[in-house]
Image (tube, rainbow, N blue to C red; front, side, top):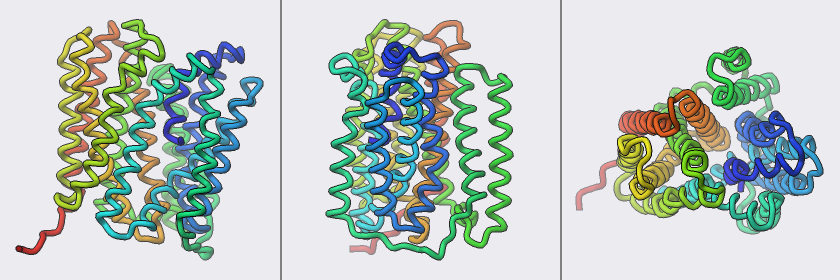
Amino acid sequence: MVILDVTIINVAVPVVGRELHASLTGIQWITDGYTLVFAGLLLTGGALGDRLGNRRIFCTGAAVFTAASAGCALAPNTPVLVAARLVEGLGAALIVPGSLALLQQSYPAPDARSRAFGLWGAMAGIAASAGPLLGGLLVSTVGWRWVFLINLPVGAACIALTLRHVAASPRRPDRPLDLPAQVAVFAAVALLVAALNEAGRRGWTDPLVLGAAAVSVAAACAFVAREHRARSPVLPLGLLRSRALSGGAAIGLLFNFAFYGMVFTASLYFQHQRGYSALGTGAALFPAVAMTMFASALAGLLARRTGHRPLVVSGMLVAAAGLAAWAAAGTDPAYALLVAPMMAAGFGTSFALTGATTTVMAAAPTAYAGTASALFNTTRQIGSAAGVALGGTLLATATDYGEGLRTSMAVGAAAYLTAAVLARLCIPAPPERPAG
């Protein structure tokens, strides 16, 4: 539900803009406001979960998200819709860190936990890739408001099932919430995502982009300085000394950069270069979706035999080969030649997601499960924004769409290869099994 609302709106927003008479700025905020709040408050959501109990914060987030979705669906004008989207982002930031922390709490056995994280990754991958298809289907049949209305029964069921089947999480009221650090990290992440989003539209040298990036860096420095002095930091900097945790977070950034960049640029290519409708574009991207569930489930099953390192390395290599093949296919290849590259990217990303997730969560102390989950998902959101921004810039500055798309796919392949190297260096090798 949370990840779907990142991608499904891209197909619906042109229709929304026409019906609500939204300006270009309003359309941008409908799309990006959610992502900015979501990414900027993830660490806050993780810290709240660790302090007040992850189940309580998870259910609170689901309630906020569901109510905000109703507000989006009933919005009479653009300002109301933008405000509801911002509240949706708040709900999402409370949901996502708690979701991984609750899985870690509910499945203490490593094998079961790997399978659970595999299903979590499968849902995330399917939602990300299916957004254009589902959005096109809803917009062309029942209207754009159903893009948000479908969240209502899902959110209600989520809360009911969680309260019924998930045990209450421990609270740590002795851990204070450091408000200056929370403000600094929100400013750093939100302004960085904003700068990356605007770079795709305005160019990398635009004063607004450079200014947002500079303030983001300043806020990040202020956050680090504050965390050095804090008795109970939001993100203990010692956690980042763990090669597994910091390396896993970097891998998440890289594969989201490549995958979301591929989905974004391919969507534009299919619509603007080939003239596909919104629904046709979603259908064209379906091969990437089809592999995500299978790959994540397979990774969860294989992890207990092989460990996570070989799965992440092989997944990144498969995805890199797929995007490299797309880059080599020419400026206007037949669609049939693109099916295998899309399937390889979808498979490789989902195949690696389980291992990267498990590595990060296993490297964090139990008391900081929500914080580790928030860090991992924050880096992934930054990677997504960077992939979309760079992909948009490459398409805008190239001599034609086909050439810009090839360059974007080559950059994505390089990101996947870098992630494979990091996985080889940072993900712990599996323990040796006793002979016999």
